[in-house]
Length: 144
Image (cartoon, rainbow, N blue to C red; front, side):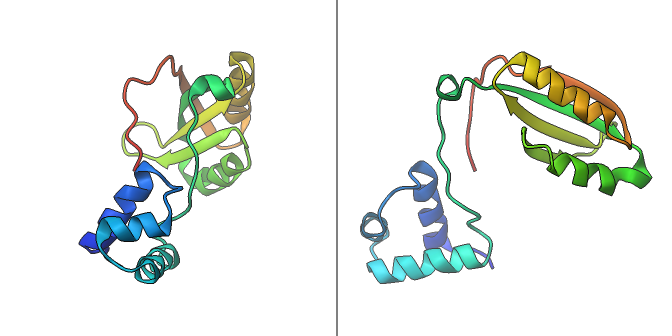
């Protein structure tokens, strides 16, 4: 499914405020509430809209975040990926090109917890090497 101009406008409005009412969305795009609701449901069913979430300031969660670059043994990559998906502190997992194979974004309440998670990742069978960077501050965050 390829979103049209109205769909892209709805998505942009939902990115700014996922709690915006269907009535407010309908007013913004000049359509009826039921038409907008149907479009949103279609976008959800097509997998264009995957879900809704909240964002908090880091201080609210007292969360330390890190990027962990992971190099894996090629024939064990699927097994490593499955094991990584089981680690709850991993918020995102990206396959990338280049010398490393995966980048995991991890979060925890302290640097000690982050260190434990990095150690767990490094001990997984099939993980050749990890390199990590603790995030000190976020200078720009554009979601979507």
